[in-house]
Image 1 (spheres, rainbow, N blue to C red):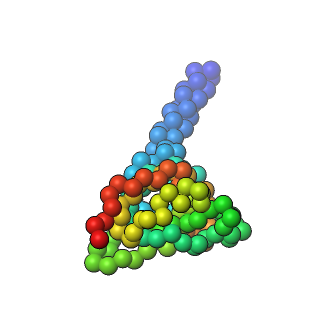
Image 2: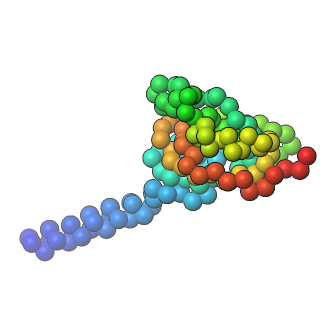
Image 3: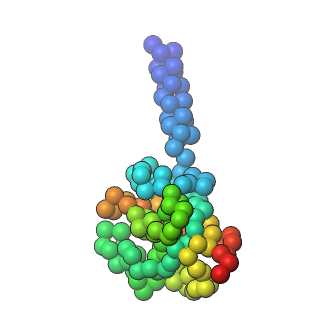
Length: 143
């Protein structure tokens, strides 16, 4: 009986370990369209995203179920990466950055390539809501 319990405990520990490995808390280079297709999968995970910047916005600010105050934050939109011939923002992703950090990037234009990372903190309205902790401009679109 003692050997059976040990075997079951070992199997349980292995199963928990495999499940943790299959769904890591950090997702390097997540695809934005995958994120909006499966917001529950990305909830409470840290992700890194490369995208084309669209514009700064007030979208999602001061919404009580996923609160980010318009006094301290601004949101930004990225472009859908499945549309190549014109600019369409991916409004299903609510991405927030602190206002003091956003001021450094006020000269960004639609189409500039960026990379950002942060934690998905909510899935209100079936959308992805995330805080951008890092923000880097990769390339600026020539005018």
